[in-house]
Image 1 (cartoon, rainbow, N blue to C red):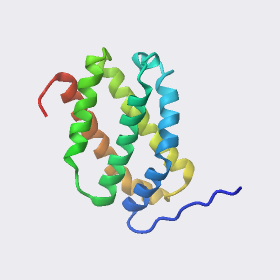
Image 2: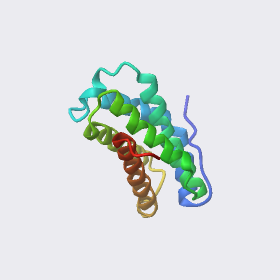
Image 3: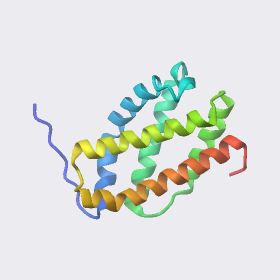
Image 4: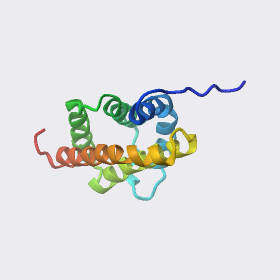
Length: 151
């Protein structure tokens, strides 16, 4: 059975948002497999709560899509990453592992975008600034949560 590719209209950001939502589950599955084997994330290898990891990373992609679509930063994004930092510290993860896991999720996002050929190179460059800003803020709030700094 042939798979129909969805077409998205609108701005490059809204096109990308639709594509992210459509493919988030497959990227999270690939991320989860990699993070449980990657040498920079050893605490993830045997972490029993894979449902939590899946849910947190899926939320990452959905928050990114929401932000790209609306252009407005949702305060729940800060709270989400703050909680991840706090929870991973409580679970004994090192900060470097947590940040590495976030960057692996970013890599899976970009690999998915490039493999899907959803955007032209020019449009990829246009939205790359927004994606970088999103991940910069996510990492910052993860660190705050990890360090126990109030949100």
